[in-house]
Image (tube, rainbow, N blue to C red):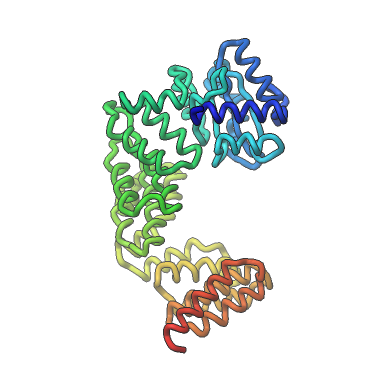
Length: 396
C-alpha cells in the first residue's frame, strides 16, 4: 500500500470511528458528509484546518463572506472546516501532519490528497486552489511524474505540500528545483525559498551559507518590493546574531535602508525605522548614534519601566556594546520589578552581562536569584549549569 493510500485509509478509519464533526455550522458537519456532497456535485473536498486564535484563519472566514474572488473559488469545492486543536480535529490534523494554521487540503473522491498548503491571503488562496483544480493529480502521482518529467509547476506543488507538513528539507530542495526549472520571467520563487530556508535554519536543517544564498536571490529579483528587502534584512539580522556573524547581514541592511529611503507608505516607513539602529551600529559603525536611536524607540518613562530597562540592557548585551550602562540598567530593572517570572528574566539579562564582562561569580549569583523567582523554568537551570561550568574552567 502506497503512503498516500495508507493516509486515505487512516482518514476513512477516523471518519467511521469518530464522525469527525466540524466546528462550522455553515457547512458539512462531518468529513464523511463533505465527501458525499463532493461526490454528488463531482467536485473535490477542501479541508480547512483552523485554530480559534489564528488571525489568518479569521481573515479567511471574513473573506468567505466578503471577498467575491474567494467566494467564487469556493463554489468549485465542498468546504469542510475543522478546528485542528479540538475533539476530532486533533487526530485528523495529526494524520495530515498539520504544522501551522490555516492548512488547506484538497482531496479527490477517493480521499487522496491533490494539494496541501499552509497560510492564508486571499490572492494566494485563490491561486493555490485554482492550480489544484486545474491539475487534480494526486500527490503520489505527481511525485512519480516529477521523477521522469520534472517541471517547475510540479516542484512548486510538492514543495508547498512538504512545507505544510513541516518536512523542511524536502520542501527546500523542491523549491530550489522549482527555481531552477522556472522559465517564466514574470514568476519568481525567491521569497518562498527564503522563508522555507529560514524555517529550516531555525531547526538546524539549513546552513548559514544556504540562508545567505536564499537572501541574495531575493535581492536579485527585479520584482522585489522595499517591504521584501526589509523583511530579508530583519531575518538575516537574526541569522547573523544566532551565528555570531555580524557581517553577513550588512549587505541586506544597506539594501533595505537604501531601497526604502524615499517610500511614503507609512508601514514601510515604520519598518525602515526599525532597521536604523542596526544600520547605525553595523553599517555606519557609529555606536553612539545606535545607542541614541535605540533609546528613542523605548516607551515614555522607560527609566522607571523594568521591562523597558531589560529590553535596552538585553540589546546592549546582544550587540556587545555599552555594557557598563547596560549592567546598571539591568540592576535598576531588578530593583523595580515585582517578584516572579519578569524579575527572573531581568536577572538572567544581568547574569549574562556580568558573565560577558568577566564576572562569572556574579553571573552564578544572579541566575540563582532568577531560579528563586521562577523555580519551574528549566532554562534558568541550564543557564546556571553553563555559568558554573565557565567559572570552573577559569579555576575560580
